[in-house]
Length: 310
Image (cartoon, rainbow, N blue to C red; front, top):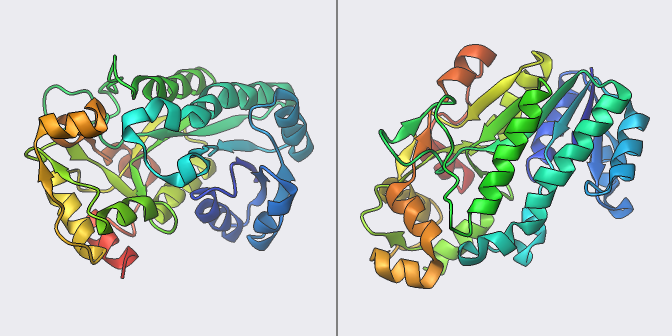
């Protein structure tokens, strides 16, 4: 199968492309500059320079590859603020990624239609952003929480845009949990080691996690099975911040995170981290395991954090 991976040299793309190549697929992986073309070649893929925000650039790249499936993995998170999280100004921190999830998705879908690409898969998100009512664990049937009126709203609306337009096109959206693994969680570990990542309030808010390799393997299955619909790509153990954060700190060789009250966290970091750590809802992976036959190498962040930071 000819697979076009937009964002193929990103943190997840670098784990996905080799898995696709290993299973015999012909992969075209995009990068943002000619200086990075050695990365796809080193993974056994054909590299192409593409600007995901330029409709002509996207159209030419897709037409040249003539793929059987497009996999949209474009983000710009690592390019902003030198990769440092800025939760108080999420709207500014995520602005380039928001454009890639709105304009970039639209450009890729238009190119797919123009060339006649029959299948489309896009990156979504499902970590702490389940609707904040009822139980702590949500399925694909539960709505995502847009955190209206906060700095997270624009980014979460962009994720909903991806689900809406890809769904109408008959594609699949892989809602990845909090990604960790090589290059994905370095910023969080650094903050923990500096004691700049405190636990807020009681830490009851839940999150879901997934190792990069498991996220990639689920995506390979979606490619090969021509999957449609929305899938929560998360591990088996949604967990409260009061459990996963101290464990991540211990695995990183850091001291136990400080605990701060909600009012202080809100003053220092804004409303979103407070909601995330005290009210966040995690996600169930039952549908992905059932419909895709997905098996995880790291069923729990407990094992994954430990092995990943050993």
